[in-house]
Image (cartoon, rainbow, N blue to C red; front, side):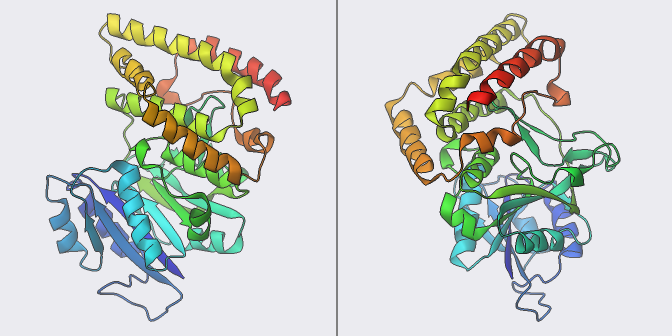
Amino acid sequence: MKVFVIVVTYNGAADMPHFLDSFKKYTPSLSRHSRDDGNPDNEVELVVVDNNSHDETVSIVLRDAPFAYIIENTENRGFTGGNNVGMQYAISKGAEYIMLVNQDIRFEKDWLAPLVLFLHNNPDVGAVQSKIMLHPQIGCLNSCGNALHYLGFGFTRGYLKTEKEYDCANSRDVAYCSFSAVLLRVSVLKKCGLFDDSFFMYHEDSDLCWRMRLLGFRCCVEPASKVYHHYEFTRSIQKFYYIERNRFLVVLRNYSIKTLVLIAPLFVIWEIGLLFMSLVGFLFMKKTIGLREKLRAYGYFFSGNVWAHVCHTRSAIQKSRCVADKDIVSLFTDTIEFQDVSNLLLTRVANPITRVYWKIVKRLI
């Protein structure tokens, strides 16, 4: 069984020693340059794709992981471009499964085997993620799979809850996996394609899993596999731009025309609300929601080349789909419950409206 583990690094000198230490300690059958348990059916290759780091990241990998294959990009290609380079390399080398992990992940004993076994035993699954715990708050969940709102907003399930409070095993199937630690089936990637480089970062995971599901493949979480994520929620203005821009791209590419028409009225209302909140943030010098970045996200679509790309990719996705939207949205949510973005306007106004609207519209899809 050939498994390629891909980690994209960018100025990761602080994280990589911890990443590599736990990886070497808890990953059996490292096959490149050094360790090999003699079992050709259980090989693990580590591929490090560096996005033109300006610190000692590459030197640390060379020192601490001589078995790793290193690809050095000459520019920062983002999460999507960096992983695409790594996945293309892995596929060219005959990978059956590809594991994507963030540079700030820490591993635990027997983290990989349950994921491989799950894909092996479930040929209808295209992606399966680990149960991702927070670090250093090791008793709390980071992600037990991700939820997707029907307007394109994504957030983690079980965030900040304990394992007792949120049982991942009760709902294995998810709208999309967290790509902080996810195992992908290469045969499915060959059918649905890799990441869209234009995303750069954010929502590439919801887009790829949506495309997998359109082809009839499930996306799941395997709680028997556990990793730890040195995660910190940020309200970065730059992050807000990519999240909003790419949310539009995901919705435009993957929904049918009928569903787009049905959700359009509420989508417009929601955008007016977000613009208002952005304006309030701008006037009061708050950076939680950036007006400039919100307008910049809209401005991205004032380009013929962008729309040509959207139409081209949308056409390919819609022609290959095997599953109707009615089945796709069965795993979508009508409520945003991510704790770090919760406020009274969301819980008392926005969520109740979207719930009522979805209750009506969902029957028509």
